[in-house]
Each structure stands twice: as C-alpha cells, then as structure tokens.
Length: 66
Image 1 (cartoon, rainbow, N blue to C red):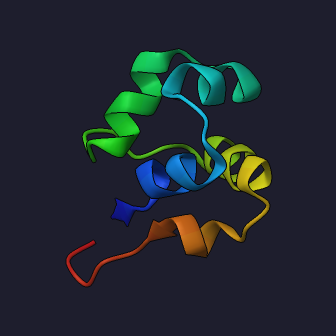
Image 2: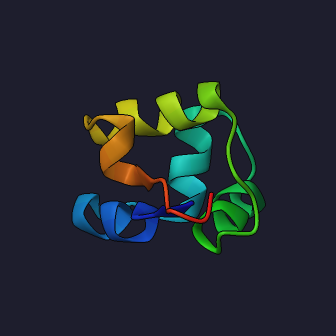
Image 3: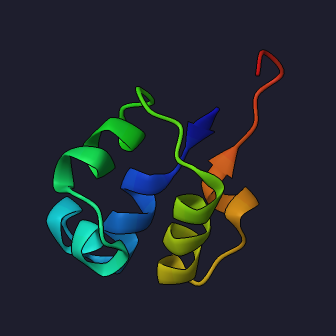
C-alpha cells in the first residue's frame, strides 16, 4: 500500500510532529507510515483522513501486489 501522506501534509502545511499530535501518535509513527514501512490500523487511517478532510482511499492507495 502506498500513501500520499507527505503530500497532504505539505498542502496543509503541517509537520509530522503536528500531525502526530492531532491523532495521538508519535512523530516516528508518522515517519514510518510515510516511508511505507508501517501500514496503519483502520482507526489510525480514519483519524488521518479526518485531519485532511478526505476519504481514506484518497490518502492510502491499495496496490495490485497488496
């Protein structure tokens, strides 16, 4: 699964730390999600989508290999 988290943050002009604060995780968690090293839980993905006011599918993209 890939994601557009880094792009969404840039559009909204928020840092990894600010996003982490908004959803209650560490900055490192945001970093690992952006680096595609960690796939977030459904709850975490929904919280992220809520911050950016977009559907989950616009931020997290399921690939054919998933």
